[in-house]
Image 1 (spheres, one colour):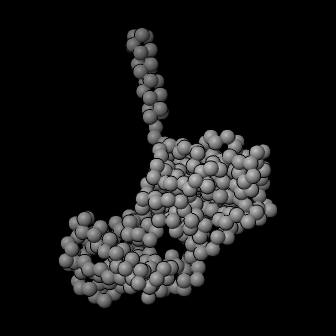
Image 2 (tube, rainbow, N blue to C red):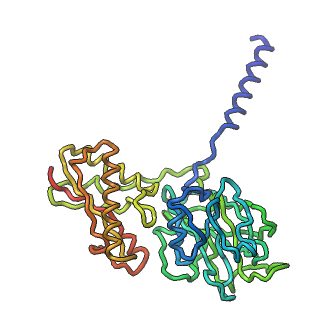
Image 3 (cartoon, rainbow, N blue to C red):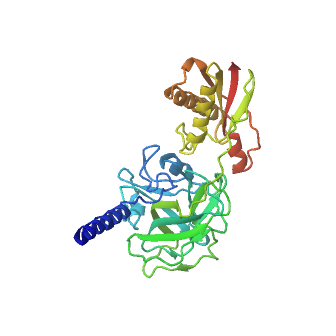
Amino acid sequence: MNPLLQFLLLLISCHAVAQSSSQKSPPENMVPNPGFEEYSDQPSGWYYSGKDFSRVAMFWTSPTAASPDIYGPKVQIPKSWSAIGFGKVKSYQGSSHAGITVYGCDKGKPHCREYVQVQLTEPLVPGQRYGFTCMLAHLQKSVMVRNIGLWFSEHEIEEGAHDPILKNPILSLDKFIPSDGKWYRWTGQFVAEKSSSFLLIGNFKTDEESQIKLPFRGDLRYGYYYLDEVRLFKIPPVIIPPPMDSTLANFIPRPGEIVTLSRIYFEHDRTDFMPRALIQLDQLLAFLLKYPNMHVEIIGHTDNVGTTEYNQQLSIRRSAAVVNWLVKKGIKKERLSSSGFGSTQPISTNFTSLDRSQNRRVEIKVIRM
């Protein structure tokens, strides 16, 4: 072959490889709504309880009664708080971000520990290495804290008190970030030990255990940080997880039989589905397609948080949401009915967050074949 032609072909090949590498897509983020841009409900003002944050931030919740904050175009910050600097930091990307208090219990500050919690798009795989990044900015004049950490739970945490969550984080901030109102990237890696499903960010140490720097100028005796663009991703080599068990796979339908589906997850206090719910919804769809003459009743259940009447209505709305989803996927509406029993038929106590998560479920009752 002509040497000049060989050189040109080699040049073209190298350019193609370089272009392919530059266009390689980033690893898939396992954190839904990573920048707090999506809202379940429109923000109406400042936040005074964990329920306020959980109601507004889509897919995110507060695991305690203490309230993280959402910052966005429609959020009105009280003058007394904006006067000391709250809200002056603009979002790293987009128009929204979150904020949490991470220190100050010994100084008597209400809501001295705040955490944000989110269900991952898939559970962690034991033995898999993961990468984590999060943008952090410090509230100037507040205490600088080095102990912001990352912890994972196998079930959703729902504590009714404002107390700190004292755990051993799997990953912690390894340095103080500057207090200059700018965003800094927190990065780290870890190997998963359990198949946890929920990610929590906050300070999991007591004030006494926390490493701090007092503000050079300012009298704020608590620590506060802004969060944005939370990312969690697998680092190759990727371990292929075992297939998720389908509750319906071994269920033999007969009239009157009931099967419990515990992985149809809903947004906090709403009828919107969490991303992970689609796995079991697709399994239910396949099940109904397998038995085209079967008629079923979709039954909703809740935990006991809230009034009996409210939970009754919520369970009815959620079972109706499952029916509507199935109809949109092609299942005839006359094959489906829905009902709800609220918190009146628990299958576990409601003493712990794990117990309550088991009571929040959807049941499928076979009416006729």
